[in-house]
Length: 288
Length: 269
Ligand SMILES: Nc1ncnc2c1ncn2[C@@H]1O[C@H](COP(=O)(O)OP(=O)(O)O)[C@@H](O)[C@H]1O
Ligand SMILES: [Mg+2]
Image (cartoon, rainbow over the protein chains, first blue to last red):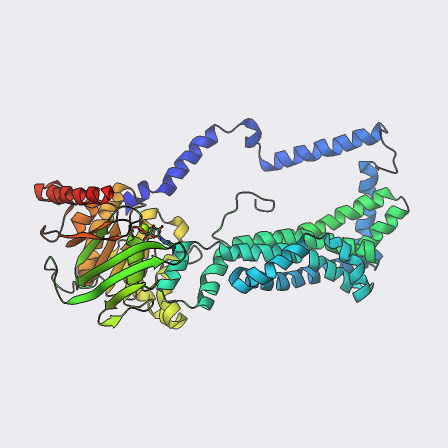
């Protein structure tokens, strides 16, 4: 077998890769941890500089130290099960339910649109039309329909996250090439078998791309829902802190919130690496 | 364990007719292209036939009709006495791309046709046979390897196994090795010859390469384009089994030149 291993296209690429690596510029050769620390230090340094020189009013931009102190305060409240933890839990529930709803609806619609001519002809145009609307504008409607509880936030979060999942799923189902389709035909596969054993697995990378975009949207939807529809979540804490001009609090709340967003995104990335183990992504956050 | 050599291969057209094409024509409705016009052809059991012709002269169309993937506009295709009206178990097919599925191991890819037709339990029973086939094509030890780790040539070997797992009576091959480099292609062709002999299979190969067609075939169907039809069927009476060094014999050169002449004539039309 060795004769085929040596002149395979794959091996040739590896050889080229190593040649390339020798020509990589210094900036691309910096290790990840160092590069990240560097950017972090530059960012905090500039922030410190701007506040220390009082270039902007402290009400608009707190110092890094003030923000850190407030983060510690909020952190303690969260860890000791204070009222902020309750608020965070509400927001997390909105995110989880919203995402689950978006996945269920988005995936089903994606299969309908990607697999059936009916879906592509009759459903997709409406989806595109709705997708081009500013979805946040539906928030008051959801509040009117579902009240001030978490239901209206779940609805908005799901509403925003559904479309990228539909698009990802439909695109994924279209990504199987002519050869694979023909092969399944020669094996006498039914339409269902072709869908489940070939088209869906082939399209999983795109499905996950949709899920990642959806994961970002679901956070935005939950918080926007809380801004516009009240309730007792983290968004409400932010709104209150902002109305009191407590900018350090706003900053630290946002930072904690971003951890929730990161966790959702990381969960999707992790699942993707486990499920779509054969597909190595080169670009995109969370795929180190 | 290698399957025992079923029958001593005895050279040019042997055995009873297995495949019968009568006046097959195909016009694609979508663009009104006449891809095939009045193609009649008989393949005999255990024979190796190649189709050669310029690109667009209907070779792939012919193969798809023979495989029951698309219906002919006119004419009739009969395989082993039964008209071909759809995909069939006794037809094995291979394309230019290996098209192994990256989420399945080599063995899982190979038993896929069984899984599709007879379900998971039957596929499990076929694993042992898949191992034997991998051994036949020289891929012993690669049973549980994912396709990403196989070279182009190895992937095509695995897809040969997938084609053979259902023990098809005929093999329809659409430029199966044309994506490989020349060295690998020659070697794969010799193995294809050996496999066909061992399995006593009837083979029908679409190719661009005159050399490949001559070295492998008992008969070469030379096609001409617009509309695609048969220009001539050339018999190749080189002795069996064929070896690569036959490519340097005068007889081989003569046949190659003759076919090139036919193809050039086709181009002028
Ligand atoms: N699915 C199709 N729809 C319409 N026209 C087609 C289709 N497939 C092939 N053709 C046309 O039929 C002719 C023969 O094509 P094909 O059988 O692929 O030729 P070859 O394999 O010899 O290159 C070409 O003109 C091609 O454009
Ligand atoms: Mg072709």
